[in-house]
Length: 104
Length: 231
Image (cartoon, rainbow over all chains, first blue to last red; front, side):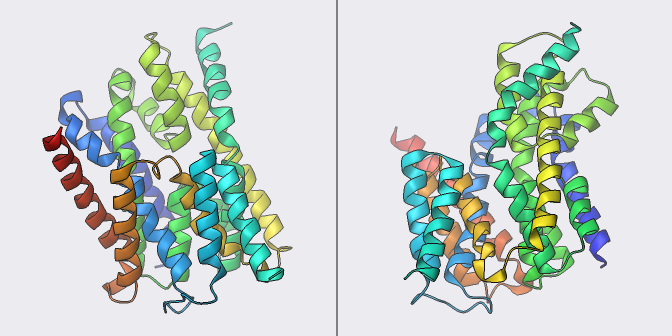
């Protein structure tokens, strides 16, 4: 598939998930239970991106020793829990990562 | 002042503070996309056509890992399933709109605009209130396109050894800061992460995002149910 076709399909599926409920839904179709479960979607999906990017190297092997990403991610998480601030989380993670790879 | 315009401005005003974290997100997307090998036009096209930060980063991540198109598209769908919730929540406020407005509003229904307009809709009953979501959505759109463009330009100057790809997990980590304090969310996060990491090499077609997401969501369903029984 060409890159453009891939982009267009990804755009279509993104649009359709946004549009389908607005266009089709009658209020009663979504009960509180389904809403509650859907509210967990970020917690259920994002870690599937986060964890492999931290713990695996480029070829998909475990990289647990000499891996500055683990320490930097832990620091970012702690800062995130304390500050509840998205920017502070990203910056503290990047800063500690750079500190570990360039200074230590 | 025209009421529609007033509500539109209110939407811009309300969503603006939430734009601060979008700036690094957009820059990182632009830089990485060029880094992975998409052309500047394709990168800009992604932001214009898809217009969803998480979707676009997942697209990049899986594309660079060599996943097939079908897996990339379904993973983007999985990431986007949270929009079903947004649509369901705001649909009751938009049910009287013409189809064309429903299409326009859907395109602009991103996380930040949803969050602010949903609050506004709950408090306001006037018939022009959808202009709030329109204003918020356009604000997100302008910031996203601008930062994507800047990322494309900057990408040429950022040395590879900075390891900016690490910004991807960090950005997603940052989007979960509100969930780290909730017990069930923490368990769901750990399950998803472990399934994805251990499944990375074993789940066929790089579909580990979908497998991990579904497993974690089922866990969430079970845990919330058990939690209710105990109350």
